[in-house]
Length: 153
Image 1: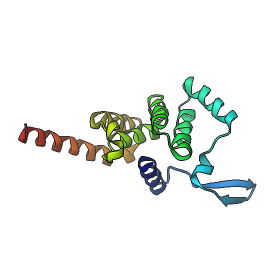
Image 2: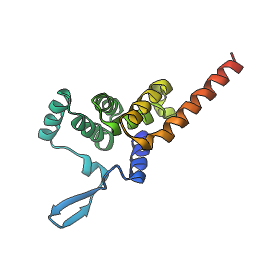
Image 3: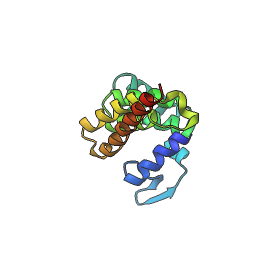
Image 4: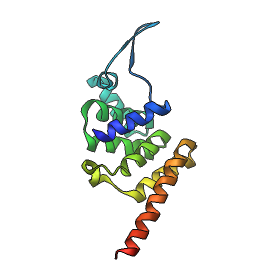
C-alpha cells in the first residue's frame, strides 16, 4: 500500500495522474475516492485482461491501477505494471523502476536496484525526460553500494 501511495503522491505532484473527478453530466463532476475512481465492473475487468494479454499497454496499466488503488494486491499490481512496461508504456517503465528501487521494508522482497536502473533507462530512452533525475539518483546509490561492499568485504 505504501508503494501505491508513493506512486500516487509522485504522479499527483507532476500531473501525470488524473484527479479523482467522476463525471455525472456534461459540465458536472463530483469528487470520489481513489478506490472508486479506479474500480472496474466485472465486464470491464475481463475486457481489460483480454486486451492486456494481447499486447495493449494501456489496458495493462489500467489493471495495475485497479490492483493498486482498489484491491491493494501487490503481486497483481507488479504483474500488470511489468507487463505494461514491457509493452512500451513509458509511465509504467518509470513506475516499475520506482517500485523496484523502493527501500520500504514491507517491499524488500521486490527490491532490485539493477532492474530499477534498467527500467529507468528504458523510460528515459523512450522519451520520459522527467525520469533522468531519478535515474541519476539510482546510479549514485549503486555506486555508493559498490563502495560499501569494497570497504566491508
